[in-house]
Length: 258
Image (cartoon, rainbow, N blue to C red):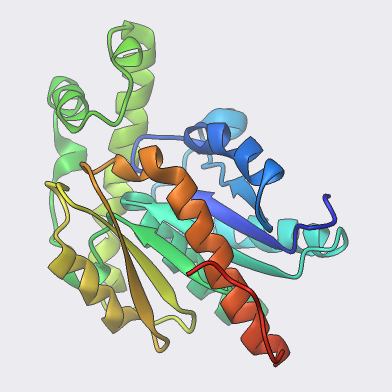
């Protein structure tokens, strides 16, 4: 582990995606900043493709919490002092739910959670997207433009991604059960200017889900614009970590990007 790294950010993928969505950014974090980016693997896909998928929200949150706690213990031995989470869309709600389990089960809390393009549980409606036909889900993926056309035009790959999306939508249908979720860490909210799925007003409702403060980062673009603005996201991660770690260590000063 590089000597200048003191944080790990666990990054949760959006619906239908895997940890691979964050792989292109891992080297950026290795080369610059104070945080290591750790893409979170979802059971049943990616490196955990041989494991059975988990479609019960609370079982999935428990399983991921156990995995992340074990990983953080190992990283602490390598000099990592704190941890945080990032989640986009579906991954935003899931990431915060996992931090709640980790706090209640292991007594640890993240320095912050960054939530991007994600409707808070208090605003989630019950839907039946997981019951849509394969073709309807495939069409939705095309319209959302979050999956490369090269993937969607390859039948075998398309079927896999549709299955992953259906599984995540089944988990998502359980998000209303988190209406009373309230975590103890600050929330950094990421809003995209032309996001057709999440309004800034909806994002602000995340304030109901934390006893700490919330702040907003704005980027230009559509629902998946956050991935095109990753250097901005990384800089915000380092700034927030510096502020929070400085406060926790009661240091007199800390140089941060404003």
